Image 1 (cartoon, rainbow over the protein chains, first blue to last red):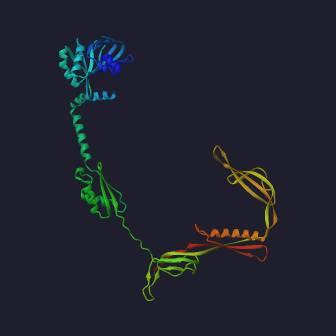
Image 2: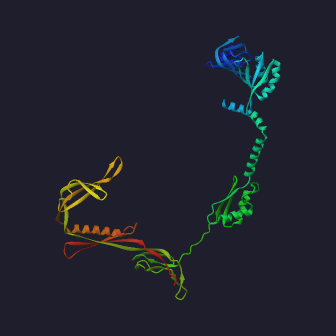
Image 3: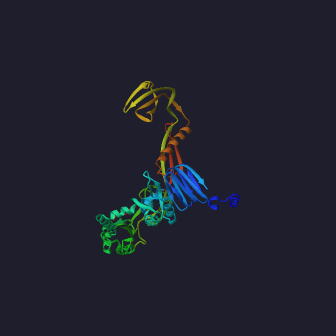
Length: 85
Length: 396
């Protein structure tokens, strides 16, 4: 229902539907906005909880560069980003 | 980015190490409590390290307990830690404090007093007056009020029309504007005499008494406006500095002659060119004859400087053209000869005119000489000029 409205009226989905926004820069940096906390952190695997599921970032030497209330920036060598929900 | 890092270094931050099982819970709790934490990564040994602020660390200890994580400080970076270390060095701290104190004290004392803008009044006078009012080297700046000083100084030194006192750091600058005393130069007594002979066209005496009137013929040296006169026959003689407008008609003449029959030099058309190199005084002929082959000749010299890539050489190339000339009897009419003479005479007369004076009229007088051949013409140019010249009276 809400999906339809955002489509037709072209409203920003991440605001209306409370979805996360993932910005991946090459395989070097990933910015995750609108998250609900860190589930798992190791240097090869980072799991972040989001509205309807979780986002898994797999790679090497992952560093949580900055954790803010609504934004997480992960640096390192990123091999894959997946959404599990 | 860079600013952030500088800011962090200023404020100070800590590198810490978390050890425990539920690192993620710890991170989430930090997030909730709004404890800033960043640069979290796993080291080669398997430790999880990160950075946080000093206040953040203190808040973290409670949170750590709740999530079962032990937090340890690895490194302290930032200005607050440096200061803390410095603080322990008493001598350094005392020195720094004394330094700042002496800077402040020395800066609030007037060290130099300068005077600007004075030409007649000596600087020492101004400085002394200022010192009497309280402005001298060694005085506290706080005790001086520049506006009061300006007014007092102006009052104290009447030769100054305006005084400005300005504090430039430790230097007091007194700017001074002096009163312009207008002195009336005494004009000497004397007459206005004629510098040249002529006929007066206009005479107006602004000071003194006119001795001639328009139409009078005056000679050089004659008094035109007198500076010594008396109102009456018997009254005392008064002396003034004579002044006025004196204009007169002046004549300039020039005489020239010309003949009806005369010998003239005419070019035949034959010419010989000789090229010469000139080195200083010496001439070296390298083409053409050294001496002209004609009996009578006219010479035309052309100097061609030699250049080598824009630089003039010391050697000059001179070209001499010799024109063969014969003498011929030329016969012209009387009118032509007269005209020639008239032209020459006029030029001579014009040459005598002073600068910027225009002739008002030109007359010619022709005269045929007794030999019936030569004509003499006199050109007379009339002008109107101001002929007055001031001559001071010599005291007797």
